[in-house]
Length: 119
Image (tube, rainbow, N blue to C red; front, side, top):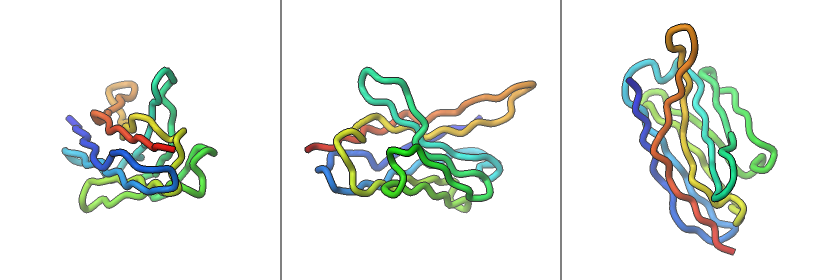
C-alpha cells in the first residue's frame, strides 16, 4: 500500500513562489515515475509535471520555464518548485504515482493541497 501526503500549498501574490512536497510511504518509491496534477474549480484535472525514475522531466506548456519538478529518493519525496506564479495557477495540486497492479495499473493519489494566487 502506498500513501502520498502533500504539503506546501497556500496563498501567494502573482509573481511569487511556492514549493510543494509530496512524501510517499512504503517501498519502491524510486522505481516509478511521479506526477503532479492540478484541478481548478469547474475544470478537469490536468497533468502539470512528471519525473521518471531516471530523472527525466516533462511539463505542460503553460508551466514550462516557471515550474520545476524534482525528487529525492532517499526521502521518498517529490517536489514542485513553482515560480512566477499566475492567478491561473490557482488550483488544488495532487501528487500521483502509478504502479503495476495485477494485469493493469493502479493510481495512488495524495489528498491535495490548495494553491491560491492572487492578482
